[in-house]
Length: 542
Figure 1 (spheres, rainbow, N blue to C red):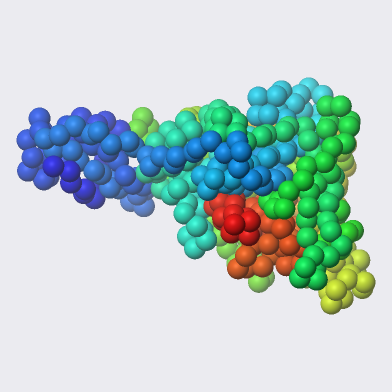
Figure 2 (tube, helix red, strand yellow; figure 1 turned 120 degrees about the vertical axis):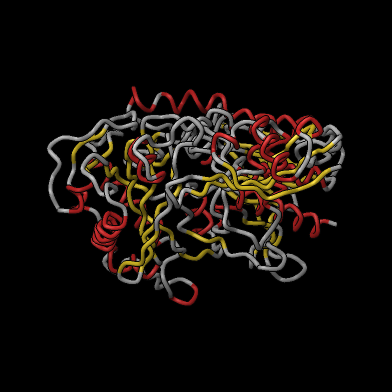
């Protein structure tokens, strides 16, 4: 007999299967020896009161042993001789598009400007000693995309556009822990996600697909007109970065999944008349506390998490002067990392290993920015007088983002040392004469972020910090560090597509996909969008 129950237990009971069996037997009237297995289907922590509970949905096997897999597998067959679809980018959007194409009987050809996930790690490791970034292999470019080395969090609020459960099951099928299927905020971890990504690539290759690394798309090949009177894509021109030679790939369907930092792609598309539009995003800072303090605050007890609880997370949001200010990509027990993709940039992001057992916890603290907000900030240069409709320049938010990252680089002594300030000093407009220890490996330098951050960002952050400090005593402290700048929360550009067929609104055969196209906001939502674009490409070609 198999039964499902919702139960509420103490953390020490949730951490031990035998203790769970004992609890269920007592509560449901079973003999403990008859319970052959307990599978956790959903798990969340309720820390609102002094006594902390774990809410579980469990599947209980009474009188029979569990025989089913812990995940729902997907079948991937041989597509060696099937029609091809080009995919530009090997982030989550591109990888899940490739796997979905195989599932649908089409052959994916993936081109990726960066290196494979193992070689990419070597370039990331050089940032600290060399104080510079490889513009083609970094925290954003390479196999796995921006998420591979920036935490691997799989939580998404998106419920409308696709099957997020399918994405999690595919991750488990390729080596992720089955706990991501049950956790309220699933997380693979930067130490384990690269191997999962590598396994996904091996599936693509085993089934007859292709993956080309260090192959940067430089331009789209387009016809002048098609039978419907508009342009269509017929392929791409790439540079092999290992040999510096050009090559072409031809296809009638191209899934463009280049990620939110491929600024050269946006510029090429804009210069060649491919319709784009400016898109809002959020910018701000990384806020770093000690893990011990966050555990104490969130679990409401001096001992913090103790033996049976995970590193604590938090989520905060506040409206300040008509714009949202909120925490983003919270990394308990994690690290602040340098996420620039080129020269004269400082960008910070966060990551956590699977154990989330580091000394510090950090979160992006960001302010909502709309395209109209940047017009004044760029001194009127954001008006595109020659564009269709004469509205805001499609690259206006991108220009603002770039200028903020360059200003941060100047404040960091033109190195990857990040400008920083103690949190209370930032709120009170004081320069910090020294800084706490930090997880940020390239190093910090004291800087008056309160002075040089754009006022419509800095002032709103200050006000939100004051409010959150009043709500939770100890959160606003000079032992926490504000680190600049967090700017890559999402794409500053949307590559406009038709909502029904998912093709570009004026360029047939081009399927803008994922975060880089402005239609996703994280690993899972990008994976979902990748599958949707793959299905749309199959529909067009069938």
